[in-house]
Length: 231
Image (cartoon, rainbow, N blue to C red; front, side, top):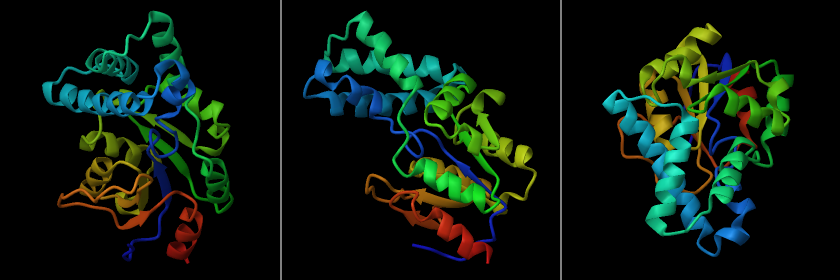
């Protein structure tokens, strides 16, 4: 679905689930996790997000590395996986170097060639994001890698999106924000960004007052979309 939107002056990407495959860590050790590895990975991700929202509401911030470990331990106990200390360490290390989705590097390269400023805006810590971006060989394509640690609260708090506007120095309606997370799209749209929902998993749109302008199955068509909007 597409509607008219202002010509984007910059593209800002969520990282986890949008550029980086959040299931890659569990998949890499699926032989040890067993046949329930997909369910484990899904619960790990679910709790990771829930804990960011709860910590924000309780005003008890901890960085995303800490939250990721807390969520992993909960998923382990809830599913009685029996994860050993060695396997836990490996899972956490793998989360630092999550694989990027297959189209990511090419898409960012095309956008860069079009002269579009590019940024990541993520819950991840600066170290997590820098490590992952370098591992995916996309760090040099990015003008900014922005972490919520600068404001010490998680998305979808408006101060996170304000961080991107302040750093990019363009009107909020001219920032095209791209995320695979419907709740993140709602937060960015509420703030005033133009939004593109990268619906990688075929989910139903969130029933919230603010939604995406564009909905795409992956990032492949983003350079063409941006070119059309800017022309």
